[in-house]
Length: 222
Image (cartoon, rainbow, N blue to C red; front, side, top):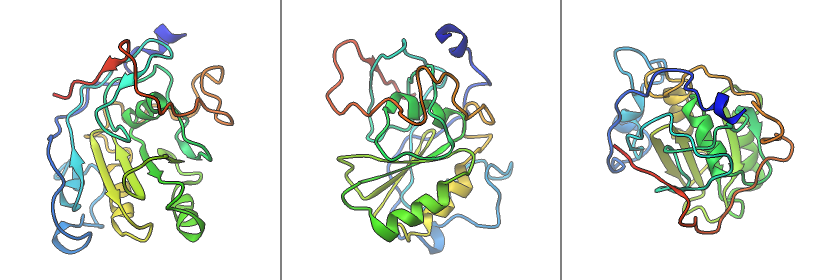
């Protein structure tokens, strides 16, 4: 099963740009044009006009052995090697933190993953995030203990950290990068559970917060 799942579903991702977040607020010149669809050919990465987005060029299609850890270079990770089985990304709101290696694989398929600090995002703020995700293909939401900002959005090779669920850049990021055929290495690949014996959406593999051991697979951005 693992060998079959490790076959690439599409071509490698288009080139990205490693760098630091752009300065500036979440509106005005730094904001994406809401009238432009995600992945429009004339602007393959609309997130370049969203203030604060970090971009890193990760090679695609690097699968670990089943259950192997990855020594990710970012937290939460947004690219690099990953488990052969992806997390269910059919608009799932996960109540508990999920294993990184499965979540990163879902990003490769074109998913936007919203992570939040469970002690800082609660009540109406959490309800707002859940309403954006629930039932929407290529979106998923999960708590992420120890997150250095209240909210962090991830797509393959892109990350945006924010302080408020009311920030307009959340919708801008989703519009720019969800199922973006030019930024996701495997756009349109399936999002439903591939192997429920490995990834049960009702009881997914939990996030491992311990440091990865010497057998962990390294991350090597291009």
